[in-house]
Length: 261
Image 1 (cartoon, rainbow, N blue to C red):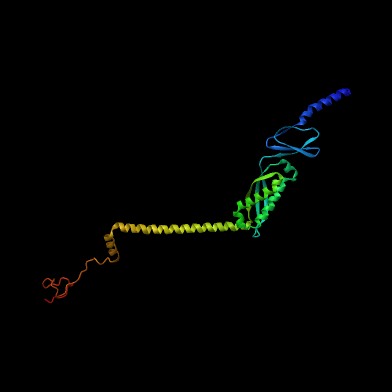
Image 2: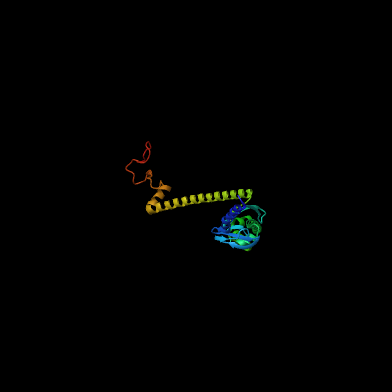
């Protein structure tokens, strides 16, 4: 094989491979940073683009969709000197691919560190009870600081959520005991209230029954209950001068006693 054939083959390979290296396809919701001899030239958006081979290179490909980044639990000291672990989730979106590439080395790491610092500064002025009940306030503070700081990086923080606030184990046990005692107290109050309602209902029922029987029957029952001997016949013996005596016999005196008549 002579030199002519070799040159022809090389030229064919170059002609075939050159168009492929000149065409670059960028997917939807993505962007590519193009550098020429190490200097930024342009940003390629979604679609088909032509670049200069051996001169233009793709520095970085960035996803423009909203991203969800969970950060590991971070220890934070509250105002009452308690260490709590806070687990956060951040929703962000890259709005400027050039700024996200050149203005910060690693925007994920930068967002994480900024989140930790903001959490510590915010919770240092709150006690544990307020921190447990003020998640919306903490989320708003985080979002305000992160949105202001990440704007120059070409990133927009859409939402910040606190997934979990974990107090120390001793505090958790104390909270569980307090909740158990409060639950038992509520149960005792409900039982006492139920017993009171039963007594009141019974009293109301007895009064209603007494009213339905009528006043006369009630008076008779009252007399029969408290003075049962008032209406019983009583035998009284006849005296000697009693006009009810018949003849010479003393009808009410015991046998064996002589009569005066």
